[in-house]
Image (tube, rainbow, N blue to C red; front, side, top):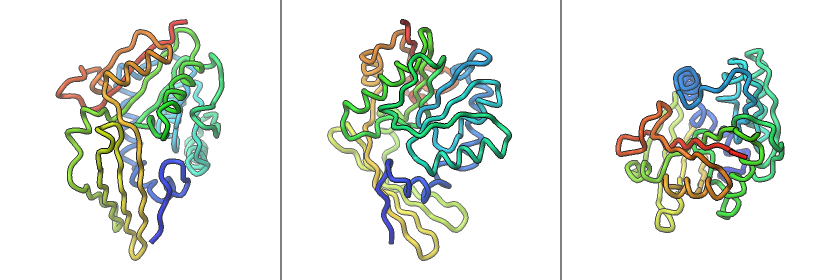
Length: 249
């Protein structure tokens, strides 16, 4: 049995890659970019995908003519992202950096943070720093799009263990609510033949009201919350928590 250390451990991203970034996830990103009014950016927009992973969004964004930069801390994920770009003949700039510390003042028209890639840091102040990084990287008038599994949605879905199969591999995920719904812990067990890998992930979860307040405190204005990439309301029928905000000055 092996154990990985979670979000900041490269072994975690390598071991669980096929479950986190399946072909279905890549196809979903392509579909969202083709159909979502929240992801319809002006031609040639300078786009920062912060916590870009293996390039799920960076490559299709670049193929649509945008000037795309992907930032991630994981060397393994960036290697996959660069290969993905090379295999598709797509030009993307990739940078290895901590989301708290990346600096490119005013360099982007759009900042994306997708598929619940926010709230990873143990200190709440560090998660607030990530929002300030997003703000600093945007040019005045630039747009932030932040996509999460909101706390209201998770409350419907924290259930007994979830079992996911990919071929002969089996992953079991068990979620536990912590600290009066401030955080969530996921315990993952991956079985590949006789090899068993375990990982424990803990991250902060946010309601729409909490996330709106944090984004406004980071300096953003014109904050809007949606229940999906189709622009639906954030209500009992919401599928995601998608927040859009603007750096006004």
